[in-house]
Image (tube, rainbow, N blue to C red; front, top):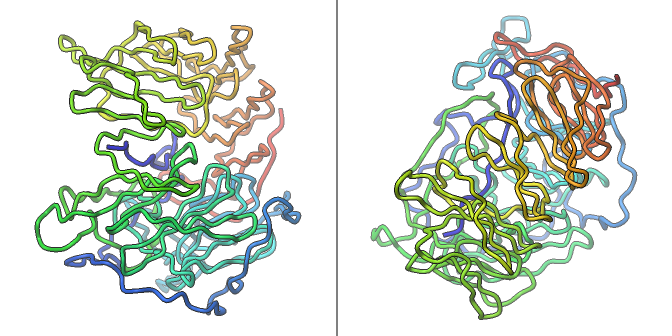
Length: 530
């Protein structure tokens, strides 16, 4: 089976900040527990109509190849003097999604709020806003965005809208028949709407009496193509990291033998209210029917349903046969990556180089030894990991430097040279980009350059428990802001930022969060200096 969808990750945010990724609220309100999930009724595409919400009516989005100038916040403050949580900031810093309490809803004549031990918010009621330099848009949920920050997916009054930061207009995807129902799984992303890695295409699932169709929409010109994954109910759909296939989790069999098709988890009746991190986790074990993984070629073609599928690797398929051998299948021809004796699991996959790091199980120790497999060779790396239970999905970027943590020692795999670079005990690789790796060594910070095979120590001392924000080419690890492309320390800040832009700006509140309070507005973007 294909590996699990990569989750959104919040890194090194202390509990006292009560910030970072907004965890789910676990109030029973808004959760729909249907007895069964059956195919949707036929959908007749409605004529576009102006929604009764604050965003603009449905429009065809302009071409992404010639965007208008997008206004930036500059150094001015925004948001009110009120407690707040940041749910998402666009990578370029041109919009911010936040939750804030602006009304004295509990009648105590002050605006106050705090978070309980499980992320539940107490005090005045919170509301969500999508904030730009010249307007604030009230939304019911901010559900995602593309890699560039131009587009955001928001929910308003039951409608899923694609909002364009350049044109400040929106497209009502619900009016086009999009399935916008949310899963009640904790921290789950959108089930059936996703951007590709290059932010040129958007996919959504159009509900139909036959189970649904995948719609791939060009963000350049608004044209759409419809793909058929085959009979069954679509539970989830997304682009694979290589952009060649749409990965569909399809329910096409009544595996629990109750006479109907059931989703593996219940659906939410409404978006979850705002909440702080950390939250509680909901799980639904062996609930509903078991989905199968179907690959649908983005350019069109017959869907691929192979019970041996591990993951797509570019246009090839990585398979595991009944004996446990790992095979790479391309154009009907198969070659063995690892024989069955390895009982291998994928630790790293690189489609561009056709390079794999595979963990082979060791009976005596219970650990896995790592092997490097390419088109022309298979060689042991002579290091072990504690265990690898699941195959790790291929990364969207063919990174040259890949961190490996076999134990206290840290290793970098140089994929171009196909060799290991040993680092120091307890080193932490914070980020890699091209031939450089940014490394934390104790309270020091340094760059490793793979071309020159040298280390460069930066003139900064890190905090004992630093906060980490990454938005390439910048990394903030308190108090240092560094530019990986320039291999340079560009600024320092003792403030506690809520977000980092790809231009090296930090989003900071007027009042920092601590163990007893939330952060408080107004907000501003600032550029640290040395």
